[in-house]
Image 1: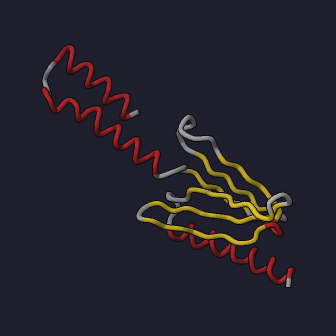
Image 2: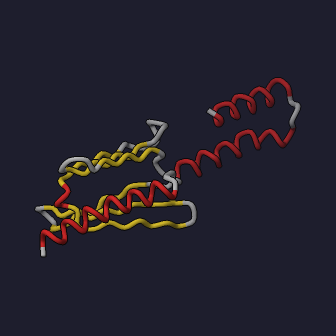
Image 3: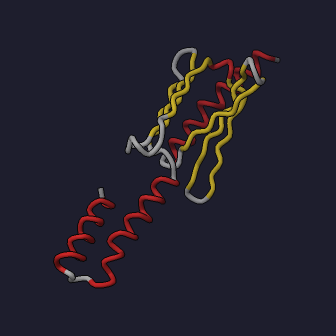
Length: 138
């Protein structure tokens, strides 16, 4: 919305008002840079549900046309391991799940917008599942 507003104001300034001069290009550049950062930082909505016998992961954008939403659901016993990677302000969750075809599959989720407490709660929940699975296999 900010990008569209910036473009409209830029066009109005260029063809009608001519009040800003060369600075009018900032009306396009700044919103585009913000949109690129928003896109690179990943999907904004991450939902996790571990109730019952299945793990349910959902990851989607608040702007529907930017990316396809991810939705994965699998039994808890298939979870092998997980890893949370943080680089600067980007956070990713990598979940390794056992599969019939390849032995294991890695699922990737963008969790950059989760708070530190939410990430810790997610880790705690996944640790319980991984620990329970290791006890069953040993």
